[in-house]
Image 1: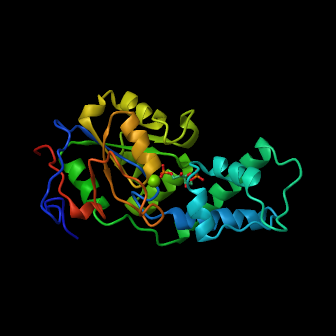
Image 2: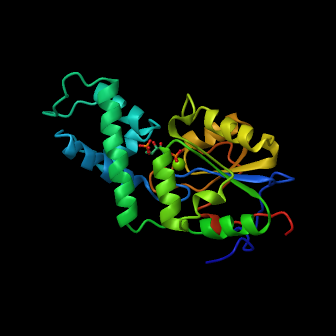
Length: 249
Ligand code: XBP
Ligand code: MG
């Protein structure tokens, strides 16, 4: 695996923020290709709840336009009718919350027993940031338990401790593409947006970071290939395709 010293395939180096003090990572699709595992957890929770729902990859690609698992379930309940799909009686907020709790439990179990790995280049960037004194943070729509599970599974029990701030899920009022989660990170780090770089995989994530004034590098994922990344500092296949001018050690 190439270290951050490698340069972009075409040799072009984006105009990185300077001075760069922190890198803020999105989680799903950016740190790791996790959405297939989320889809498996959703479908398993539907079976556990006695529902005849099933989200195919095509269903899920469309549903991912709605950020947040609870919001996604609610959207499906309100807008999508499968022939013969039973709509649970009295499926209100509490019912959605309970179904999403089941899903999150399943997701964390699947993480623990699965083989999810960090995307190419992510570990090298995390290590280089630590060696060079850059702050690391997370800004994600997914639930905090899912972040903790992924970081421990991929980085070991000290994984979560690598990040000065983890802003996730319902910690903020409005999910991506709203800027709330990135504002929460900037507040926690006490840094201006100009001193940070965001790493994202989706249009919703890019728009969230840009609305907070943060320069954003995009590494499209399996479910976000072909989305609109207008406004990105650069779009690269994976992080090992571009160098980051780390602050001197
Ligand atoms: C991606 C999301 C999340 C996940 C599912 O988050 O939109 O909703 O798909 O996780 P990000 P939850 O790319 O910002 O990391 O079911 O916990 O929401
Ligand atoms: Mg993402």
